[in-house]
Image (tube, rainbow over all chains, first blue to last red; front, side, top):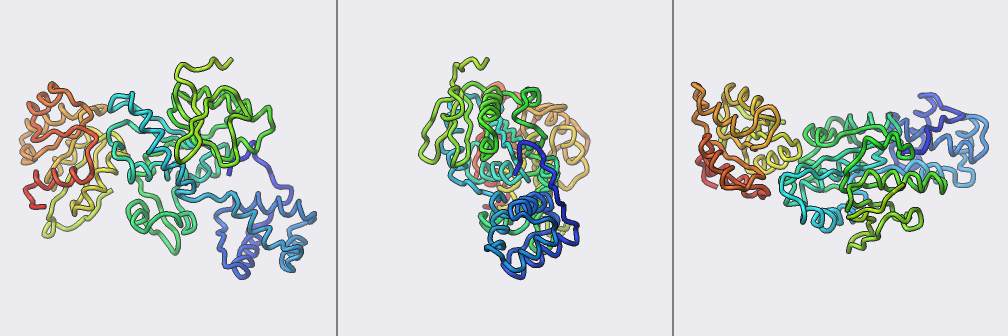
Length: 290
Length: 136
């Protein structure tokens, strides 16, 4: 999951140490964390080292092995809380095709562009999920020029998104049929996304708080911005929300995470209550965001 | 991506070239055709499509109209005027253009059939089967 700024851990474990840690977690919990997910692991591990007041990886690992204060559970939670997977928020995807897009295309000629932005997109599960969901569930997928963009501040997650390689856990919500259609098994528990699907999503780095960076992002019909604004302080949150407002086409929609409410952040958006989700809309005529 | 790739002796029910500039649309048609047993090749515009049909081994072309570099109508004209055996290939146009003029232009350029998007995956497979002369 993207953060406002890239945080360099004060204590960084070596590859061998991370390997030991992963092996230990696997033995104790059966959960397999692959060393190639270092961008998840480093950050979460650094948080736990800091929270437990450990002075080094070695001292933290000793504490973990003794499971002091249920540290194994804390670490596993930290490792998985923001790990994303395909079809994670299925109700929002359902809302996209059953509500949001139906409204958008009701006034748009066939062949017109429809622009969808997933930010932060992390390692690509969300924008690829949108593409798969549209292929599987939206009968008009061929009738519009659909552009899907995934952005994140973290170039490491973007590289992973572009490589399109996922473990079994990321695919746990997908049916066997969908996996067979859009993924190719490339090793034990590892799958590569279909090249056609990969080409359907463009990935770019962006910091949504910076209006200079978001200036290149305009005319989006739908923005998925889940669990990003919660990382910000009030001022940054409002700035980010209003940058995103400018990125939307008038009448465009933004979907946030469960615990987020745009009404508490910025007065610019209208609330739309669809059966599957609450969505925020930039008014057709548009408020003037100055 | 090519699905159901088989050798020449076991090529039934045929190989379809899908020509569309949208990778999502190509994927949508590829899935429809793949499920119906077709092998599928893809091209992103008329120029790439010409290269692929001239290389041979294609039984049907499904082509969009609006594409960069070479549109579907120009592709059909070029294909029909070529001296290759591929000049006679059946061609199904699937386009968002619904006007009578667009249909007429495509027909004059050599389209055998014209469908307006959105087209269901079942219909893509059904028309592909009909145009390749296969019972479905």
